[in-house]
Length: 159
Length: 171
Image 1 (cartoon, each protein chain N blue to C red):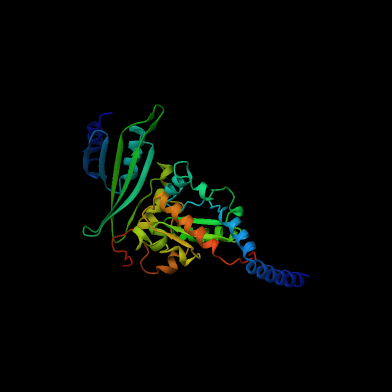
Image 2 (cartoon, rainbow over the protein chains, first blue to last red):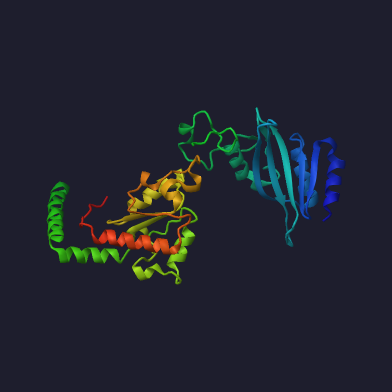
């Protein structure tokens, strides 16, 4: 597969919604997109390039820039096996009111990943059917009434 | 009926304890039988279990000293806490400990189970297993080498050898 072609095609089709793109080595692409268009872009990637397998969904906190990044690492499970291409789809989310559309309708396997990201960063995934506690222990709310999200940079750890 | 039975067994227990602890050869025999049949629960909380695995395998072979990992925790009398215990896991560890047969012993293996180790300021671990279990032996290291674990087992055996025999009421 031609990685540069994929980026060109994305730019042609979605124009301004596709932000910074990077080619990392031979098989890695990073694409930053606006959250308004992320569902369409994901659908396009799945339909056209058979990127049908979510490796991970993670959050990254940038307090200085006042934003979160939600990073979907997606790859492909074709009939011939696991294609070497890995695409990182980055969605920028406002830090004050963090919410982004859920991509479960396209990649079903992102459900628990999104739930985890919601739990640890407090990023709302609109359209997610079950945003409930997944990994933290049951007494979490009682122990941390104010500071709810442990992977944010401003979460206070003990000395 | 229950109270009568309990009262009888209770008195019997104290009588047996007195006899066993009074007669040195019998106490020795009881302790001896206990110290060479330490069966640890197969409970893997973190990465120290790799060293535990190495210790149980032929190269280091702690079975020579009388420790044999066994399948059923109802037959076990030793629990080795292999590394970090998260707050979620702590409840399960407690539950497993309470299901083991008495007399039961606890070995805290690795820095994490002793003092929190690498994750001492994390939001979801307990700092030390002695918050939830009565620890007999601490084996420090990150992770401890299999020899260190074997040494810990031998220290535990020393401890058992010197113990008074208690016939503990089952829970």
